[in-house]
Length: 192
Image (tube, rainbow, N blue to C red; front, top):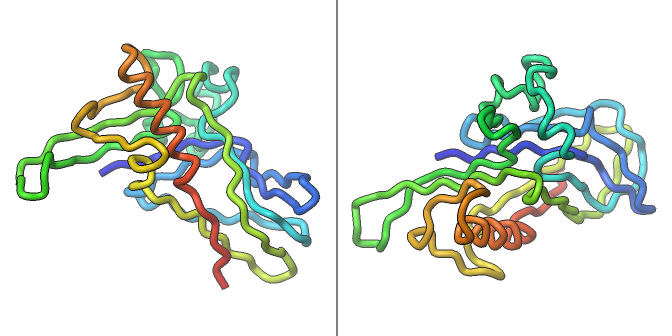
């Protein structure tokens, strides 16, 4: 029912390893709210081998004043709802929904996994060889939510349906497993 992400250092990666930052490097995805498409102008012509981004942001930004950002900026907490004022930082990812304990059950229960705190920021590289020329290039960043729960760590939501990246040992352990699994969640696709 909810999957939102705040990312930073969003950039294309050239085949020689240089990066081309997209916009100011920040972006907010809201998959159920329809915020899933972004346009960037005047990208350098050349060959690329993928994209890179950080789930979360550097500590100074994470603990800075969210009111410093304009209303339409991804880091404006009033726009995204992803700033925990009480905890002094952003929620990097909010993944919420419902589950049943077995396929025959009609009773649903809620789960809530919120990735936050400096300890849980992660950098990703998503590979794909592609070229940018004078024409418009469309890339899809695909995300498979089921992979969060499958590999390399099998996670049963019913065992611990809530982790807000803080608190007890079980919550922290679960968030580490989800983030380890998240290395398999993303793929990149060139759309013609």
